[in-house]
Image (tube, rainbow, N blue to C red; front, side):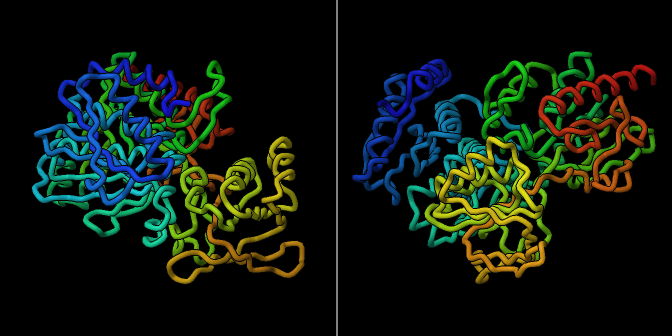
Length: 517
């Protein structure tokens, strides 16, 4: 069977006219099956355009299999030590197009900041092909490498280079190194990456923000609620800004979505891409890679939203900042985060192949995580706080049938233990009155729900005892001119379809607020 099926080939073929300059794949192979697959894949792609060629040079890369995408005479070099399928196929396709001359789509302020960097930068990003967070980071650094040939980027699939992953103690994806030093792990915005490279360039990004003209409505958050609000506002002819640190929000972390009415099945990253494509059809000022830090009333009555050291102003604001993973709040959790404590089984599960792991939480997300991990890990133990797991019956049946999964109920996690560099065990207490225990594990996957991303709003709008923004039936908050929608609010039932509808409601309410003055 061919590496790329006809559907993927057709998708690539439709993009070939965007390649306007020669592209060369410089590939290094070994005798592993992954090398044969990579060789076939690159051959399939090269056959689609006379502008693409493949040159084998086994001495060109320290890792094999690897290949570099370059265009002769440009100095651009993006390297994949991977067979870039799964979630990274889009990263590969974008890199191919951008190296081939298709314009990089980043905010102008970010483009200018990247081009102003004058020192050589060598990035290495460790990923897994099942990681939904990885493509965002990979594509950002790839774009930087296209914009500035002083920046080079290598993407390493941890499953292909396990010795290297072990030696660097990589226990979370993505993990990014810059010039041999650890830059960070997990999701990272463009602004953070640029700041690590050049503080002056990061300052230019903020200056570019401050120069933006006032908006009629500013939407904070780029998930389903935020995008829905922005589209509805743009359709009304409203000058709208849409800002956030991650387009699609937590949708990116969802592997399968089957309850979005009229869409029988999709995946989170695809839905996030579809949301962006829809937003880009309208005159919406999309500002990526920024995080709001406060909101105030300006002297002229406008609303000012602080974004780092800069601020944007608007006559009305829609808050759609969503929610993040709930933490356990026990000793050792923060110390060993990304050293064995993780919140995304799809992203980091492959790094725990053949190891013992614990899943904290027996709801739907916890049981789904356990089932996924059972196909990778040696053994999975689910620790559930309540007397029984609360997942759907179909999931519980599947879990009971798995010999690789054990369940411990009435288990209150007390501490995460480790050796200073990685997790070694988790200690829990028996809430039913029995003796507690210490469970030896290499990984702890926390799946105990979510908390709203509203810490930056404390004191600005009314929050309930869970930190959720209190809204009325029209999405209005306690602050005049400020509306809210989606998982950051006290509205019941956190679902994509509900968030989308709430975003439309908040947008129409903001429009009504403008009309009434």
